[in-house]
Length: 82
Image 1 (cartoon, rainbow, N blue to C red):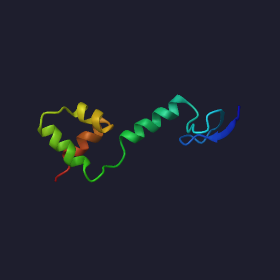
Image 2: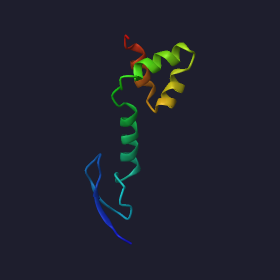
Image 3: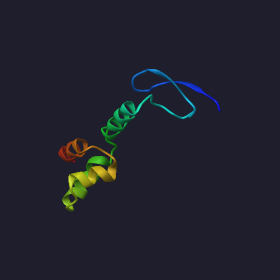
Image 4: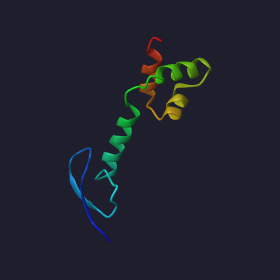
């Protein structure tokens, strides 16, 4: 079994793992990455889709779930003027 020396992409801590694709040293850092991913910059279509689906009656929470974004991110997209 091979041991890999890695550096956490979030906190920079060195760690050892047997999984060559592991990117984070702990669950806390992995959760931070997930949160950051949900607040990523909008694509060209994000505000349009959010506004379209919201006008069709979809809740902010459901839109966030479908787009894998935070509810704050969806609310910001809803505020964008098209």
